[in-house]
Image 1 (cartoon, rainbow, N blue to C red):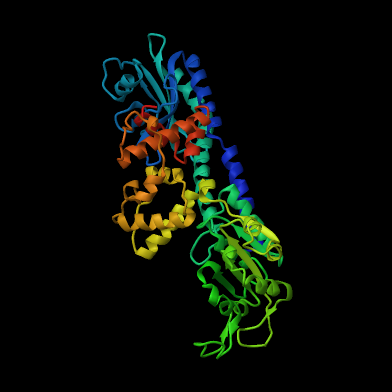
Image 2 (image 1 turned 45 degrees about the vertical axis):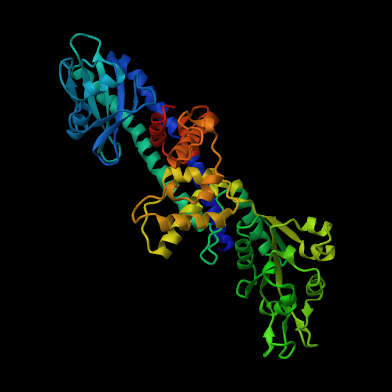
Length: 511
């Protein structure tokens, strides 16, 4: 990925973030609540409600209304007065509803209200005159009920209200588009290395990647510190691909995997006859990487006997194959990685201090997965797509319970453990089904600690997965509600679900 593309993506991401903050749904809903408050006095009615047509065009949903608080009432297009006003695109007046059957009776039972009379007019879009909602007032305070004058006034109010509804609909479309673009940007901003992704959605990871891109432009040696499975080699490849050596070899060597007696021949090569079994000449890894990048993984395990030879490579850029006096010249960049603290290895006498300072020009620290939980969901989606393609399976995605479980897991094996867990889930999930916690490994389930006091239904010794997941979900919802001071819009955003989804879960768990 070039610097220009990276800067463009960063600017687009920042613009999307501003859109998400600026197009606050709360502002529009406050505007609707303003209409709901002022309309009843104007028409001498007891109540007012504003409805919009749902996305599939089969029902209408209340967006604001007197006496319903933050709850929502869904009315059918057939069998309701508001549905008739929308489908027939005309004003509807009903003044004798006390003994009449219809959806208004269902709504009355839900709200404890008694509907005697209704005036409902459709709300037409300002741009193309399509009907996208309706406004209705209930119970005229005078005995005569609603009349044509009331209808004309409400239609005039509806023409102004249409602009607010247009803004809400456009807002929803923009937020939906923003979310999709955000997901796509997260994919584009992956460093696609050997089919594996390096996610940069979290701030912690984004900082590391930004630093890696900066150091890639200069020929300094880099040490990458991080736990096993955090993606140290991927970051090293990202540095190589962003450097002037990108067209040259990237040679990766795991120092911990090479026996000490083979270490010198592995790196420097050997001449035919240099030792028993050397039946031909062999180029070493240093020569293979010449012109490009040599990545030394687990550098802390480099034997002390080899460290002086590497120091000469770094200082003089030269060395000799085993069994030869020929001097080989190396033009390479060295990137090292370790899951151990190199400074501690120096203090313990296990690593030469002069070699340490030769290698330690720039240090990058990769955060463990538990410190960048924002990356878990996009990592899951990326791994799921890759594993499904590899296994030839079509699956419906992740259940909310599974994602909640993943976000609560400490992931001692980091990204590598997550990838293996998803491979297991894909293998054990039937075609077209949703991935669920029931198929997770016992190791993963055992690593998630759920306090027993979180739910009264969480009994002593209870190991049933649905109960544990439900308790975890309750805890996450309660925490989000506390952190946002009860603001459901903000809480749903923190939880990564829709506001309607949050309402359903609040009702389900009686929170």
